[in-house]
Image 1 (tube, rainbow, N blue to C red):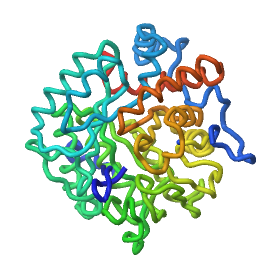
Image 2: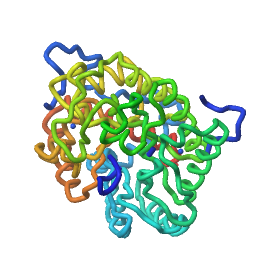
Image 3: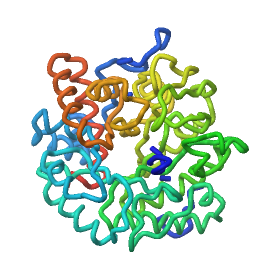
Length: 397
């Protein structure tokens, strides 16, 4: 996701500094070999037989209280306009996995906290993620009292480490004070020096932290830790990288990066950052990467998600889509199919800015799982991954 009008869409560990203030169906190419079977497309972080772990016990207890529809609902984060947050009440009461604060707001942090607190109290099961785009620059959803104006990531990357640490600490503190538990940031894409103006989704807006993987890794790690210090989960985006594309998937179909391979530096940096003890999520790009999998956009590619991100890079946490509600890149695919293809490829959380497509997505997953045992097992694994992340974030207590 990217800025509004142009469009919409945040964006080294410093241990001795103050605590840092955080969519074709199978997607595989004929020659690709999958690292795991369909029934384990989303790795299970825990299982009923591993009940000795406190997190697993929490997840098992939560699952026991959820019927099948409620379990599947945990796999969706649905947009609610910041100009009409009451629309989130029905979603939360219905058991949606998360709410995305869509748009821009000048509301004070304390006013947002009253709403997010109401949502937490209204949840009959696991508390919902409350997600926002809080990167900096043009991509800062929350701008009212209690939220400092954030410079764009390109400017953040020029700060001395202690100043970036302080900025990250303030970012985490402000989001936590407003009840935001998931920041769809920071951007981990690498935009080569001199190509920024031609890189429409990232470089043109200064959303990148640097022009090399090393620079990006150090600065993004600081932001991830700053968010985590205040109990806010971060999201590394947009795997396997949008630093080498010309067009934006929010506004164009058929966006492709013909250069990036599974061994490229902008892929490796995601693996390094995803291994953080802060346990960030990873957001998928909706572009296609022919050198990795020419058969499908990354969001629907089993090669990208299961083989590369999970297998090669070892990531076992939640994988979330970029917006698959209104983005131009996915409009030729029926909404329900967007959800089933993503989950089948190994993903975890479906993000839609448009709440009107959520019912069709939920129904499609339920219908497919009811007739396809292999897909049902894949859904089971995704639900467990989603709930494990919630347990670790304190949303199952």
